Amino acid sequence: MKRIYVNEKWCLGCHLCEYNCAFANSGSDDMVKALKDIHINPRIKIEEGPQGISFAVSCRHCTEPLCVKSCITGALSVDNGVIEVNKDKCVGCYTCIMICPYGAIMPGNDGSVIQKCELCTNNSFGEPACVRGCPNKAIVFEER
Amino acid sequence: MNYVIIGNSTAAVGCIEGIRSVDKAGKITVISKEPHHVYSRPLISYLLYGKTTEQRMKYRPDSFYEDNRVTPVLGTAVTKVDYENKKVVLDNGDEIAFDKLLFATGSSPFVPPMAGLEEVENQFSFMKLDDAAALQKVINKETRVLIVGAGLIGLKCAEGICSKVKQITVVDLAPRILPSILDETGSELVQKHIEKQGVKFILSDSVAQFSKNSAQLKSGGKLDFDVLVVAVGVRPETKLAADIGCKVNKGIVSDIHCATNLDGVYAAGDCSESYDITSGQYRVLALLPNAYMQGEAAGINMAGGEKAYDKAIPMNAIGFFGMHIITAGSYDGEAYVVQTEQTYKKLISKDNLLKGFILIGDVARAGIYTSLIRERTPLDTVDYELIKEKPQLMAFTASERAVKLGGAKE
Image 1 (cartoon, each protein chain N blue to C red):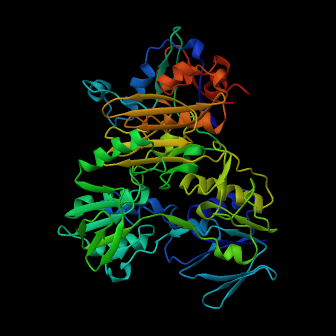
Image 2: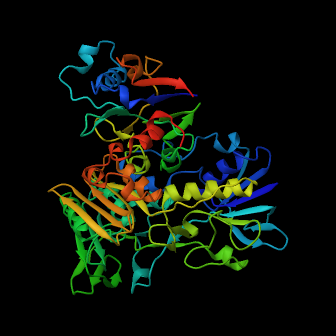
Image 3: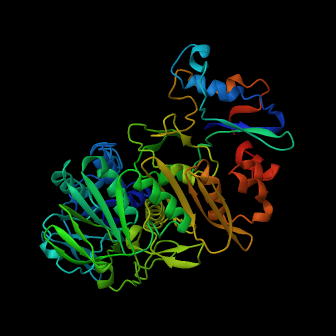
């Protein structure tokens, strides 16, 4: 299965992946309207370190997904290798945040349910917007 | 192969999914006293709160049993296991043969002897869907509720019904709330937050005598109530297992393959004990994620596969009225503490390992801490100063990050 991989040597720390993610999951088809004057809450997040190191972190779509096994509601499930969240079932208990070793699951905008990367399979993009918009190929979407 | 699972909750689902990952053909029968499709027990407070519905709180889709070719025998209790003849006997007289058996019997509310308790008409436990439904029927805007027990169950119940009733008082013998997961500072912070919602606490006290609608407290006070919820604790359901010679301490004893001392008999979930790697002790870890993972390991092993359940730790993610709490591990060791008005963080390390943590208010990326505990990552292999500040992958080495994020092989 194709997954998102990160090469931190190439990451510029430009945060474009975060903006593209927020736009892709906004439901809007206009990036300016979607992101203007809001504090974005993307599903991919850049870590920046002391020595100029930066890299993007998003769901690894683990083959042994602790989040899915730990989910108390059954809201998290695996569909063709993609770990998805059913927001209708999620109650925002944050058990998945407790267990994800990558810190790749976060509260949604109002905190009442969680959100996570679904590889843009459930939005109009169809393939990861973060990868498509990365100017330096620091994030790739590949079969390995 | 005939698999029989006694119980129909999280551990049972883990077991079914574990079996089916190895054996697509064997016959699986799930037996439960409860008549319901598998649902998530911890969601009963959310049901009362109005955040979920009976349909949405189903732990697996309606087609789950059919999809996994499971025969559910629901609303029927197992009265006896006949281990010699490899069959279980049901309360309707039926018998079901097994080759492999899983005890996923869970736990039941522990109600200690309390003087006059039998006079209280409106008294409830808070474990099962039927408990929640029964409680919901009797409460209204005029109801005064007394909850005995300031643990996870009692307080989730308080949150669930808080906006639907007139008054909630929580009484507990312990001097502080949630003592099983919080330290004193944490308890105080959470208690203040819950009190702001109108819930009243009476701690270091207990009920000396109940009458129909009132409780005489040991300290001398008297409390009038309309509805009583007893949430003092739970006890593992071990009787069926003990009757056939399974070793039982507090819970059913099982090894890292979730096997009991009897050949072909396994145990998982709240009825069983796990080896807590943070304290080095066998304990009942009555937590949903552990129940699933234990059940899954049991199922894989029952079906002839190989799966170890060897990373058990206590861990809780819970929230009250918008305040989130995540805790894990055990708290014996050197503490690192950061406290603000609305947040609390405590990390406990010992022997070059992270042993436990308490996070209140700010719980972002807590799983990175949990993982350090579960994987027993030596703290001198990460930048502990950095990760103490906040959970982050930056604290790992570049080569470790290449494995975690870059697809490099370990």
